[in-house]
Length: 176
Image: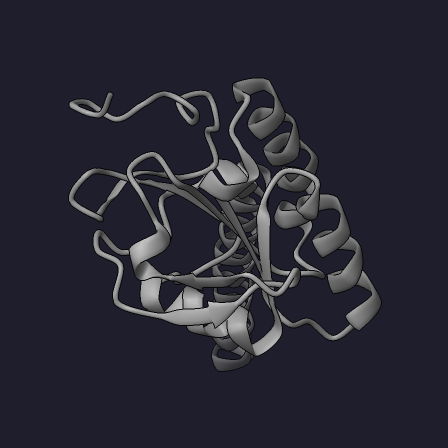
């Protein structure tokens, strides 16, 4: 009887420990989900060479990313991307950025209709790249997660990154 009581007590302690760990993991996941688009930067500091064709037929390459160019990376089916999309469009409009100085990258998703909807909304304020072309741009920028937003400096490097859009639209230091 004593061995079975000890085993039952040990099992109860292990179950309680597992419950506490599970609770901690759930809290962490919820915090990460709430952070969403305002999470840490998910792009590298440099941009490798690339050459793609935008939805409107415009050729876009690394050389076209002039200082102050804003890049937005979105993935259909991603809740933080869906939340950031209207904020991104609104921030670009509010900053008065010309379409040619904003590059929106829409990754291919499971639902092509959703990707087309993203592209339509973004085309109002940006040059849009979708599908496999989007994978090329994302790889060149070192995107590790979605959504990601960044701006290019005079050296062709990423000067700002993240989900806080308040600084976008300002000219980088040293650019007239």
